Image 1 (cartoon, rainbow, N blue to C red):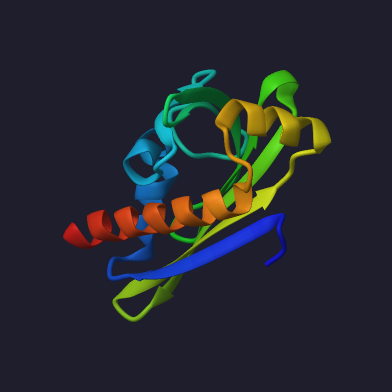
Image 2: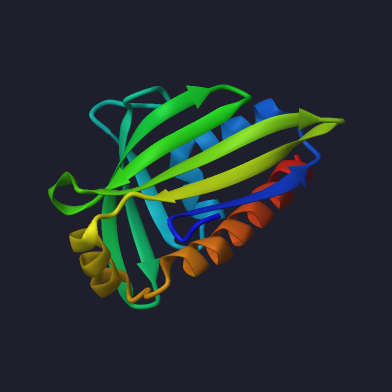
Length: 155
């Protein structure tokens, strides 16, 4: 993967449909992601559907910031993808979760694509304190997938 994308996978011994339900309930993202504190649907959205919008509240240490999200792909049991933007609706990232059925469970692949231009890279570093976003996200993705796996396998 390049410095502008990252991807990790984990096998989860739970049906792809269950994993999809968990990850696509964006209000639960704080249970999985080490940076996400809280997420809320916006504009009357109540669940994952293309173009549904949400607001995320994030934290690293004492630094806090908010982002806006928009669901790009919502295919139950298969794939959930959303785009994140920040101030002035400037693009930040595309996050995706793909569930591939395998045996009694599924392989879950989390992906990240950095969509920031130069301005957002500078603003993002100042807001979050993160100099190496790829390494930060890889560590966060591992934690997210491990937490998701534990909860899904627990039932």
